[in-house]
Image (cartoon, rainbow, N blue to C red):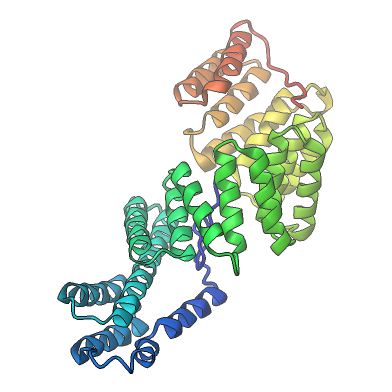
Length: 384
């Protein structure tokens, strides 16, 4: 399962950008709460206030309200730095300055995060650079004015960059800081990170918390299903997949996921049906072809074996997604061996072993290699 991290105003693993109206409204409310007018009202009795500082903050605030790009937020941050270094701000102005600076860093960070999403969707190699800049800005926001939003967004960037331990610490802070109105995305994101770290029972608890806020959250349901499957709770995992499909019957990935679960417990026919439906819904979903090919090539039930279709499906999966995933090569090898093409199967499996598979699967790959070298096809078995 790929980690699917959600930002507050964007879903960072999605192909498109989703702006949250509630998040935008919250930002606007934050501006009202820390606006210069508010600070000015609180400090009217302070005769020592320096009018130049007030005017500068008013100017920065005006630009910030209209900011649409990173360059505008940078301009505002330069102004904030000048006010800070002047050491002329009153206590009330200094408090506002800190909160405004933190807010600006979060906003600029989100601009970079959105740029990273677009770059990733377009195959632009700058995606990681943008995300690292976003991480830098969220860290600055935490330094200027720690808030649950700054911690949450920094957790998002850390998770996307694969810094799972750091991301977990950030989501912990976000959840503990936002005690009044916790955002369900924080629980979902922490669950995804916990899953990646192998803390499966904790992941299940957080998926469940996210679902308590939104019972129709399909991603939380499928995430919890994956975690329960890894915990050998196959029946409960199947119930989550069933519910997810009822909520979103057009989701090809969920059908493929449920098919994999069925296959692992020996429900071969149900698995075949799910893989067929996944392919019907999305003709470009390579992993659905890969799973279907594996089933047709390795199923112990001869009635579900199909040499020609297994080869076609395995080749289609590689054509769609390439040969970087060892599983696709392993599947192609199984299909070739099932068709009696053992030398070709050996070549594909040797290549799979060279593609840095996880250490825990290497013994299985080597076992299949020995089977093909002995001139026999591989037959799958019930895993759970």
